[in-house]
Image (cartoon, rainbow, N blue to C red; front, side, top):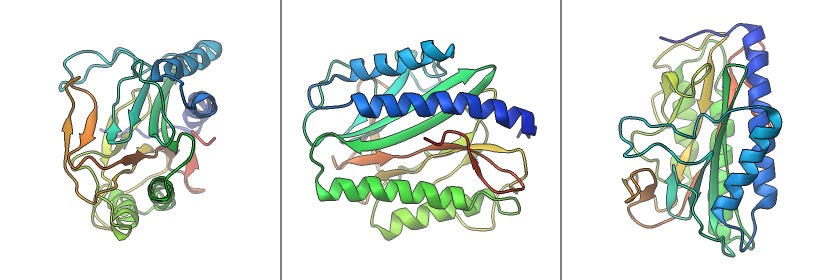
Length: 255
């Protein structure tokens, strides 16, 4: 069932979303050669503490997971697409990092992700990240009253495929509100004009994921959480929590 949020609820979701935005900005600023993923997790955790917010990631255990998620960020490096568990790995020059983060505040959740290169970026990596951001922008632009979920999916998929990138099969965005994952699912590829109509008060986490090698295949790493590209090429992830309103899409996690 899809819950339509009131305007007051959307305002409250934006408060949670701004905690997310502050944390991602802090993590991006802290990331550098020699910094560990666990240190970045602590940076984000401190933002939660300062805001009096909780983590929807820490302790989360969906049906596929062998253990509860042990951190407040997902930190996915190079060929890791999503769900990377922070470890003592220290970042190296040229690493491509995707950070996914959520916050719960006042009973509402925000969720967002960024990708960036540490140190000197390779042109191919810079283009991959830029394309992920363009795909996200295209999906958000399609998130208007009167469109359908398929219009968002088609907008994202078109940007990704035209750039020659793969899209991990079976993964995409989702509804969001009182819980991190709600209905409806938001695919990253689809047919325009199909699917659930978009209405004022819907809240969606829109999140394109791109595989540089152009294939859609991936596998779960030994930790049971991290998803890695089968071909070993790099991946990027971008995400915002967006409210559908009569005035147009409202980005609740804008940085």
